[in-house]
Length: 101
Image (cartoon, helix red, strand yellow):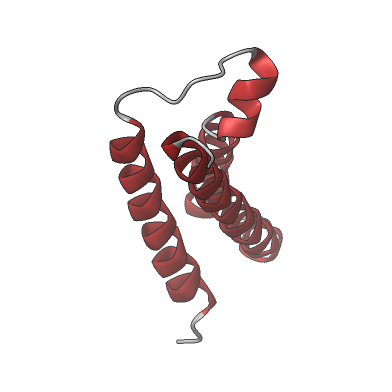
């Protein structure tokens, strides 16, 4: 039987992959909006999404394994919960951004 950390690590990786996908969708949408309206607000959203994208990529447990960190910390479950809330927030942001007025 695999160690209990394995399912946490796999689930964490899946959630962070979902966050990366949502952020890439938001980035494409905001770049398209910026090209149309040249707004500073849209440019700020692009910068915001890029920073969140870097955070999502670097928080992926597979990246940690590549860098040599092989164990999930004792707070792994709490980290997973925070990633889940980030995923939900990004999904809501994408929904609101795609919704026609």
